[in-house]
Image (cartoon, rainbow, N blue to C red; front, side, top):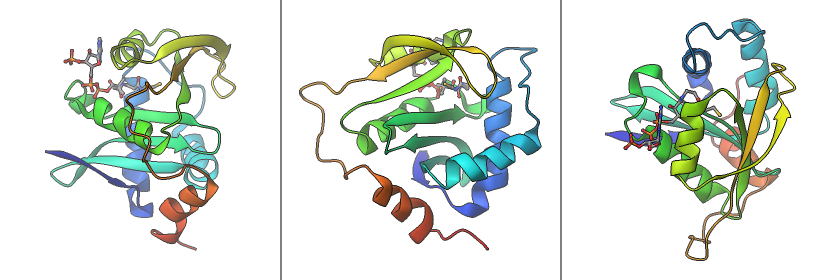
Length: 175
Ligand SMILES: CC(C)(COP(=O)(O)OP(=O)(O)OC[C@H]1O[C@@H](n2cnc3c(N)ncnc32)[C@H](O)[C@@H]1OP(=O)(O)O)[C@@H](O)C(=O)NCCC(=O)NCCS
């Protein structure tokens, strides 16, 4: 069974490696312009300190994660380990994003990532635009999720306080 739990600082190495491997599984031969060391720095500086992060675990092993910028209502990252794709984990992570951002959110995905686009469209997200990703310089498509009238609106309030509680107070960073 796959369960979701809040990210802990000790997950860092596992999650960054999963993120790297899953991103490079989008297409054979795809190479990110930054190094894995750059990704580690970006993870700590841009994601852990600013976003709410959840991990998916199967038998105690992390097999996916998602990171949400609650203040800007952006699903910044959603990645499943290559060995566990197409098992419903992405749907679980997307449902989490819908719970923590009940008023809707947007995200960006590579224009060439047809699998993720099929996944988002299957889950009711709609294309909303295009831009160049400022980190990797690659074309991306923006998707939006807008809650329907029957959506559960009782999820916890989103905002900087929620991020602080989830990522810092409950699981203090070392140092
Ligand atoms: C995109 C991603 C998050 C989806 O997660 P997942 O766990 O593999 O997807 P799920 O099993 O929850 O899929 C749910 C549905 O989405 C659609 N879907 C998912 N992957 C698909 C694919 N490769 N091709 C077509 N449809 C797909 C299907 O309708 C699927 O239902 P089905 O398996 O019953 O047909 C995951 O595949 C992944 O991490 N990919 C690599 C990294 C990536 O692209 N991340 C997103 C960056 S924006």
